[in-house]
Image 1 (tube, rainbow, N blue to C red):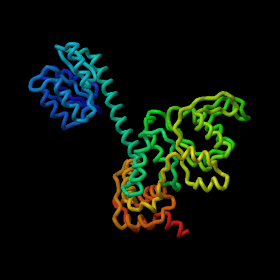
Image 2: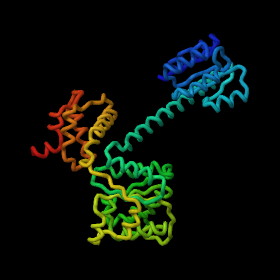
Image 3: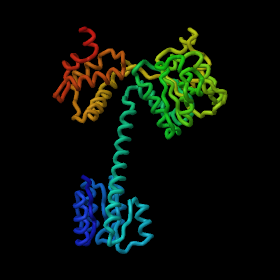
Image 4: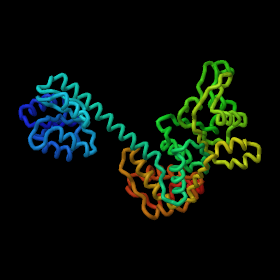
Length: 393
């Protein structure tokens, strides 16, 4: 139920507004002057405040201005019998949602309240989504190895330099790419991801560069490729080491000239794309075995960022587990569980071949399989880790 605060020194106005709003099923509180209203705003969360301007002790404009420092999402609708355009403009500059003159028209008042509630809900939802995104993309860890990665990101992200991210599967290469994009001037443009290992070699060129209608048997209509979709933003080529040699040649040309040509077409299309690539392979070894082009390696690897495996940053495991426990609790809508010290030490000692991805899966399994327990013990960790299960099979 939406919660509304009425701040007005006229008792009759407060009662009238309360009757109208409670009839519409809103929860309503009252304050008889600006000072009392501000104290109520500090102590409680309101979706909307209907605030008179001319009041003793503290006028409505001062209440509005001071409320901005509270960091709340309350939408202010200012009400006055002596309102002027200058007052309305001043209130709007201070963040008021709207301005209504006394006596208020009933229909206009209710419409204004509904619109203010819509905005309040949108502001709150946006903050929640931003917190979720921030948590999802957070690079957790204080080890020397991960601090180097964070420092590299801070230096490289604001530039347009191409980056080659290396590291084993599940170590967080995609997360590094997302941080590079988020901290770049291209952050408001698309981040387009391509998993080169998941796309058949005969389709990778169409996926990257698009195709014209009739370019091949199944090309029943024109298709825009990933390079065009990422125009102005960032293109993430994950598992670049699995890309076919013919596709590598076209990617090299796109990087050199800033142009692409759709499969089956002859028109050159200019693209402005920052390319970030990632691989779990040793690309120089792939070059020696003629599986990867040396010139493309040098084009992609302007900056090299290596993401270490989890066994090289064991001291980060407790921090990662705490984060996963909180994330999983939020996903399940349950209270967050804890893990005792012995369980943490046991998990720190395991050989995490799947790296962070495997650790996250194990933590989720422990949360589920430990049932109603509020604390996960070492025996739970021993029983439900994948290593133990594999040994028992």
